[in-house]
Amino acid sequence: MKRRNFLLLTIAGGIAAITPFCKSRRPSTTLTQPFFLSAMCDVQTLRKIGTQYRTATPAEASEDALVQLLTTGGGTTGQLDNKIKDDFTSGRTVTIDGWVLAVTEARQCALFSFQKP
Amino acid sequence: MHTDARDLPNNTLIQGDICIIGTGPAGLSIAMEWDHTPHKVILLEGGGFQYDDQMQDLYAGPATGQRYYPLRSTRLHYFGGTSNHWAGFCSTFEPLDFEKRDWVPHSGWPMKKSDLDPFYAKAQQVLDLGPYEYDVAYWQRKDPALHSLLPDNPAVWNKVWQFSPPTRFAKKYGDPIKKSKNIHLYTYAHVTEISANDPVRSIDKLTVRNFAGKTHTVKARYYILACNTVQNARLLLAACPQTPKGLGNDHDLVGRFFMEHLEVQAAWLHLPAPSKLKLYTFSGIGSTPMRCELSITPELQAKYRMLNGTCSFMPWELSKDMTPAIKMWSSEDPRKNEDSMRSMWSSHESSTATNKEGFKVYELKTRIEQAPNPDSRITLASGRDGLGMPRAQLNWVLTPFEKYSIRTFYELVGQQVGQAAVGRIRLMDWLQDPNDHSWPDTTGGGWHHMGTTRMSDDPQTGVVDANCKLHGVSNLYIAGASCFVTAAAPNPTLTITALSLRLSAHLKKVISR
Image (cartoon, rainbow over all chains, first blue to last red):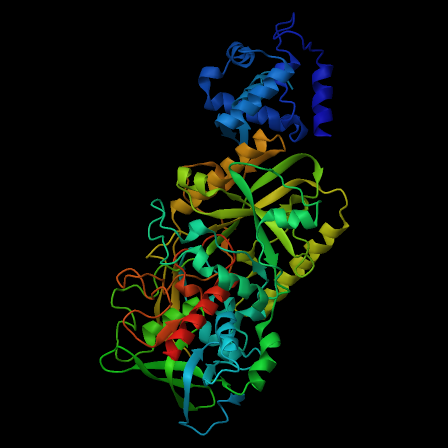
């Protein structure tokens, strides 16, 4: 249910998923949607994680910085999933609001948190 | 053979070869080993065959430090001891638990897991458990639906628990004891004095008393103090008039290193789809032969310099409304506490049974060893009990080490759960800040008292030797969890029983010389 809400929200926003930024300069859903995590968290939780991550990591607290970090080495869904797995394997994890997360999915939440509710 | 010591003429002299003080799992498992032998065994129980409020009150005492359950109600003072309200959880200590770990001060037993293995196997029968199999693969072969959450994981593994019915020692062993020709059970024979020879190198006699006003003397060649962790220490500290600082207490160790298992709700496991997690789910004492809890491998425990612990799973839908044990087990009357606990478990059991598809969110409850700490201790209180003995006093002390270990545990589990893409872990609020060393008001113990007469080959670092004999005293042995050096993660009854059987086997060799 939570995942469905998330998808509806992002689809309703009319966001394209092909390039990091669509014509309106909004990040693509691929980058703003931590797909697996969204199956367990509602939109408010993802936004809260994102906001707290930006506060805890000021150097990454801009959309441009986050997009660049997320797209380095590829920004497709499959590539991001692999990055998340690599993060967990390598111990590149962060604990945000108690959630033990891959850095990549925390960045996705941070990027998502820039979007207006 | 049974005698009620209240019915004996005052100042009766009771004599035998071996005297066992206490009839809980330690005392009775030892006693049964001596049935049908030529040795006369004196088995002393302070209470009778039923709960007796006057006897139970002898266990009351103050507690300071970390909030704890009322001492009066955590142990039971009648035949069968605390097995009368034991829940039946059993698992073995791991080899690492016996080793000296340089990151755990005061760790290291003077024995190995392999020394205890034959006695663990025997203890399985004493406690009516299944085969001595604690490898999850064995159980998965029997039931392929027992899927591992993290199969073949290098960091997190499945530690098996087996469940005793639970064995009520009084019910199972009461009649055999009464019918035994060489075991002489005395009820209402509460030890109040341990008299040593001069110099204090052996025990000469015991004094037992009861509320009928009778005082008797017990003499034996060998004595085994098999009360509980608090009472073992209390008797050593208070009962020997020749040693004002306490019997076996030349190095100020008796009563120190009191340990519990910290049991506290600490995190949640979120799954993308409902699952029953059959391998991990508790579905009722007596109806499930086993379940697993997650544990961290010895290699990672060493790498992260953390304590040993496990986590169990409870559907959040059910656990969110449950009262933590530390708040529920708050009455001085153990019968009330047990009723509350059984009622809660029964409710949980029925809710779990009716759920077909499983749950998406599980509460993770920690059971972790407490680091051995000399400041966590039993001492004598200023007040005296109804038979004139100084009461025991507990100062339960936790440290940041335990909290660090719990946090690290869930971060490691979180990494593995994330890597395997089976879900995500979320730490509870109280665990999130690594600089916060406070404990939540839900923090409790498992009613597992351990460590007050710890074992060591060196009298300067331990109260008993590897055979559980009191250092410096030739004929007094201590049985029970008070001899534990470290607490490991599992509930202690299986290890108490195994260690007691080992003590008994050793004493058989000694007495046959």
